[in-house]
Image (cartoon, rainbow, N blue to C red; front, side, top):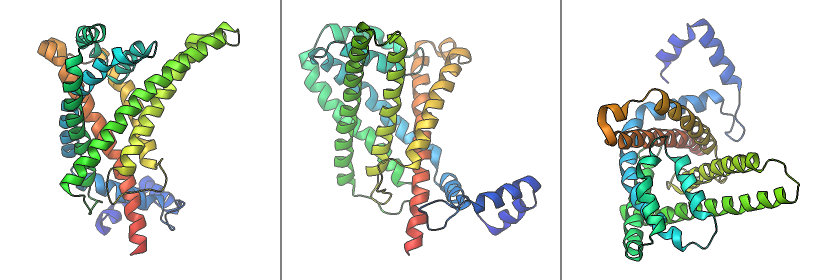
Amino acid sequence: MTKRIEENIDKIPIVNWLIRLVKKIKIPGLFGMSLYDVIEMYVIGIVKGALTSRAGGIAFSFFMALFPFLLFILTLIPYVPIDGFQADFLFMIKELLPPNTAESVDGVIKDIINNPYGELLSFGFIASIFLMANGVNAILGGFEYSYHVKEMRSVLKQYFISMGMAIILSLILVLTVAIIVYFQIGIQNLMAKGWLEDDVFWIEKGRFLFFVILIFVSVSFLYKYGTKQVKHHSFFTPGSILTTILTLLLFKLFAIYVLKFATYNELYGSIGTLLVLMLFVWLNSIILLLGFELNASISRIKRSHFK
């Protein structure tokens, strides 16, 4: 922050007191740097980093990768030998999508589940891996164009890393659904033995917990291996915590917005569903970048200490 801006802020009675207080708060592990230094670096990265433009690129590529990925997973579902996997995966999809959007593709989803198409499995696999890699590659590209990131990977290396990360993220999603299925079976067994009185309550809380873990682990994985320069010894970072909290808050607020205030269907008809979904992906992309910028700011402060 420039000296002139600091001098102008210092003239505001309450704000200057808050700034002096924040400057006194030292962050452990940042070599005596204060909370004010982190916030200052964070704001500079957001303002000078073209955040919304980068989020737009991520949203477009990720939106293009979403449907081929779902096609592959839904085609694979009939071959998964786990009872209840289909129902829980569909429930997970509805939880991840905004209200009134999952219903628009409900007929297609049921057709794929009830009628396994072997020929779609190979095509869906190739298309989903290719487009999902593009989606993850757009995320990593959005990370690398941060104001605080100066070192970049080569294009070819970045794409192969994106492909590997796309496969791992897909496995994390499938594994999470499988764990939820076995968790529900365990809760029902405890209910049958009389150890629990309300299995619905525990199943709902368990699903929410695993949903939070899915977001947290996926975001932490992207932040840890997303760029060459911004790396952390710990898998869990302040940025991943911030992103998880903001994502859960967005899910709640966006659901209220869609159900109470949005009129996309009245204006655009059935295409309004796609507009809602695209807006949702774009907002999540912004949140993802906000968390990364926090990690990048902390990383830059640490690098500046060793120069």
